Image (cartoon, rainbow, N blue to C red; front, side, top):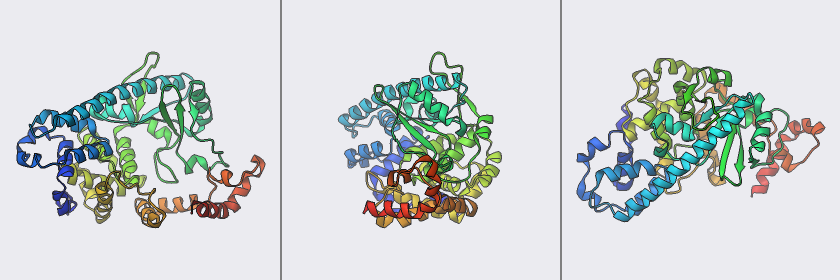
Length: 398
């Protein structure tokens, strides 16, 4: 199956702004400028192109490519707008980078190992420049057993938890995956992860991730070193993250495209994808990247992208990508669409991980105490009460 052609519906060619956006996001866009229909540029809805770039969080790439094209059809006001956003993003990313380094240094100085996820660390790793990617917050991954101590030091650093939800029994460690902290003065949000993904599912242990870590760029004084995920684990994480959100922001797909040309042991990645249930999301990621960005799929993984499941999942994701701005988020749609969304999310999991997910739904969640507060010694009652509390929350939404 040729995913490069099979995935691109004919109606995409009618969407000139989206077609141009995809062209601008390709790695080889600049050498291919002679293929741009100059006459078509005069008929573009440039305001819509701007909205698409903002929605998909790819303003830096769009600005730099349009600046290189330097065609008279490109409105000067559009370039000024993009330039201003590009400069604001650069300052914001440098601010996040410095703060991420400061907090990482604080935690590591107290014996807490930290891996940087996404954000400035990923921008540096994949693009070589933090200004070339956008990010709204900082994501840090730690071992689950370090969570209590890490929360203490986060608050010592001036961060306050965004949620005051109580943790019930021990199910939060594998039903949830992060807690958010906000610094009220620095306007920085840090998500402290103890897992890569929410809900029960397959993923490498923190010890395995730490063993295969990469050294990142030091960004703050007093920080001996910062670490990011190894390249193989990075693909597992990025593909699962993008798939879970329906790839409704093209920024995530561009990350996959940039990772494709890095030094990754693709042969070693394939058994890892099988082990952790990453074949559906990985195949979907490659199929989409090849079709929309012209990404060259590494030889060992072409079979993964050519399966019927990968093709079907990629077609599902196209609906999210094509949705009007702001695009629909798979699990945050109106209630009438939730069965379809849940069906999509379950289709990303293999049989064993699907079973684990369904079992996890029977265990207490952090939202249960908000419905029925109980003293800690009675928290065990949340297990038999779980169906009733779930039903009460559902009814209260309506």
